[in-house]
Amino acid sequence: MRYLPFLILIFLVSSLTYSRPDNDFETGCTVLIKDYNSLISGKRVALITNKTGVDKNGNHIISLFAENGINIVKIFTPEHGFSADDNYGIPQKSIPVVSLYSGHYSITEKDAEDVDVFVFDIQDLGVRYYTYTSTLYLSMLDAVKLGKTYIVCDRPSVANLDYPSGFMLNPDFESFVGKVPVPVLYGLTIGELANYLNAFYVKIDDFHVIKMKNYSRKTKYEDVMNFWISPSPSITSLESARLYPSLCFLEGTNISEGRGTASPFQIFGAPFINSDKLLNELSSYNLPGVKFTAEEFIPSREFLPSYNAIKFLNETCLGIKMEITELNAYSPFETSMAILISLKKSSGKFKWINKYFIDKLAGTDILRKMIDSGNSLEEIMNYQKKDVEIFRGKTALYKLYD
Image 1 (cartoon, rainbow, N blue to C red):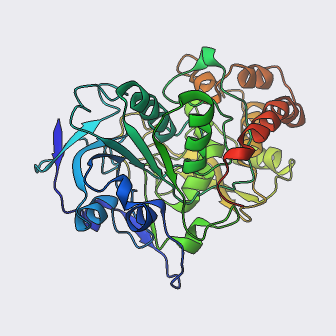
Image 2 (image 1 turned 60 degrees about the horizontal axis):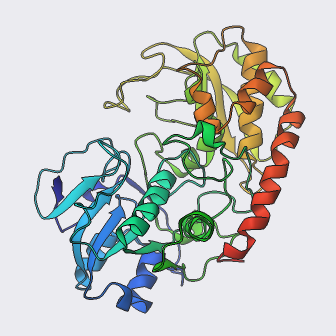
């Protein structure tokens, strides 16, 4: 067990500051303290968080709780650790810290024996295989098993909330990158996702989602948050967070997803790629809301010193740079399918790797088999549409914002 000092400074927070006017928006953690303090006052609270658990001005939930006399007895952290940089060591001692990634994914009875309430506050990316959703789901299940109160502080989405898409999780392909029974992109805030999970799969007796104040489904992250905080080592900007769903499937291929560069999950390629040929293939789809340009890059350890699996380290890669031109028009899953199809068509050296890791990311082997069989983009999108529409109907009652 490691420990975290009480005073959380913007120290650990590699952030980008936005120049925004004051607004009446508030994150769930602020609303919890102001309007629902009785849920945590006098209780022994365990936070499930990392450095992204901040309010609109970058004040961390730990500092906010400490300032308001809330008794934090433990901190549970997701993949990448509290500082979200794969450094799990915290040298100073004050609050015990337990990793829900290195060693085990669930909260043990011993870990929770001095806890009354779990409070979850972590920035998600709106996509199933970003493992903070797995930590949410598993810790909710732990709350049932351990008989604890569970509170989710809702946060603004970086994604288009009107865009659930992608194959549903097949339980045969369940893993830590595919734990939550939803489509690849779930089109919900993290609080709405928790609402849905609790209604259909978990059923915690004492469960609360703390809504944001003055937020709607059309609200853009950068219009209400004054800070962007990198939630993991390779999500270094809001742009990479939004493009991540389109490029994460490349983790199951021999194509670089831009790790080890200044633009992870914004560029992709390999030494054997013909950029012009690939660009022509992608351009033929006329994908909405996204722009492609040819790009050359060299992955290095300069930008990702702790990551041991950088593809094509110190090699020149030829590929594509992506840019979102209109968020509400951009279709991440459709774009990801077009990228995979185009890579397979344009390069004979494209292949799946790591024992079909793509199937765990997709939550099914249907995606891979359809691409290998030469199915069109339209056929793939039509295949996944029925399950997505069923999911959309099931979640309607659990949405918190118009």
